[in-house]
Image 1 (cartoon, rainbow, N blue to C red):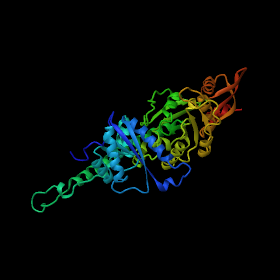
Image 2 (image 1 turned 30 degrees about the vertical axis):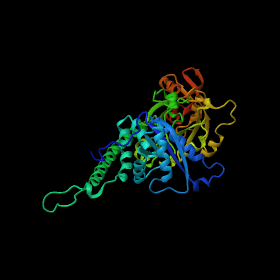
Image 3 (image 1 turned 90 degrees about the vertical axis):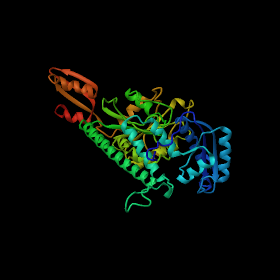
Amino acid sequence: MTIAERPPARVGACERAILAGVEWKSRRSASPSNPRVDAEESLEELRELAESAGAIVVDSVLQIRDAPEAATLIGSGKVRELAALAASTRADLLLFDHDLSPTQQRNLERDLGVKVLDRTQLILDIFARRARTREGRMQVELAQLTYLLPRLAGHGAAMSRLGGGIGTRGPGETKLETDRRRIAVRIKNIERELEGVRGTRTVHRRQRGAVPLPTLALVGYTNAGKSTLFNRLTSAGVLADARMFATLDPTVRGATLPSRRRVLLSDTVGFIRRLPTTLVKAFRATLEEVTEATLILHVVDISSPHAAEHAAHVLAVLGEIGAGRIPQLLVLNKADRLPPGEPDPGREISSRVNAPSVVISALTGAGVDGLLQKIDQVLPFDPVTRAQFRFPLSEGANIALVHEMGRVVEIHYTGDSCSLAADVPESLRLRLAEFVL
């Protein structure tokens, strides 16, 4: 079996894992008021990722160093300490909160005697488990192969294939070169298939664009409650789970605003700090649902002590994928978890994001009506205006259309005509311009 055929390393259910994080002193001195908070937050997030992958976390270690050590990242002394810890806790797996070079990973596995994975490999493993559609599986495979390609390591002439016949004697193509070539070919094939998926999505968006409906993209840090809110607004019944990255495959459903305007809501993959660039590139077709949105609903778990940092990470990813200039509405979710009398929750986040905000609880439904009204106010598409109409009674179909697509506030019947005032989308007002007073 070649490396190209070998499945990527996976985190199995009930594997006992030790978490390892490293804080560099140069970064530590940059925030003297609370030097270890970033490293500890990141390590806690790694714990959630490990548990989402099915591992049991038995211990965690945070080391402070001047600089990374080339051979093992953490140095020989810490390696011996981790080896003793792994033996005493009967750990099967060591998870690093950093990306490891191929040499570092190989040296650590040799010295520790357990499987070693870095943060990127763990996230790729979770994505591989959660992808359900063919497109999602292709995207994950592309990210895994892109990550694996520069990390292949061979054994020189010992793995050479000797040719036969005149002019072919001596080292032929090595196993390493064969693996690299096969992976490169597979990457090109997946990219070609994903381009086809991208073309299909473009056709679908054009078809949706033929009937002018704005698209609202739900984005946010993973486990912020996007899928719960999506279900609340659309009754879609998509998976809503407390595990990180529970939802990968995008879902689009229709919803109706208080103004009677119809919109499309798109639920997307959650973001995370240090989201691997291979994943951002691989999920381009999915993330295009965000870049093509009319309005972004940025969902934030307001009950999290790290809510402001999570919002900042999401903004950074939106900038990376070219969606930074799309109008946003900040949805401060999980208000039911806040202590009673919390003063002005989310003020710091609102000032950072520079967007209007609404406080809700997608779980209980509190504030969702206010969210829909706020969407109506800020949606930069087909704005709602007050219009006065006069229809002959023979125009029953158009009178019904105003009732269906607008909000009638006043109506009078006189003789053979019907006069009414209604809040209607601009597109409907233009469509019925001959009846506007």
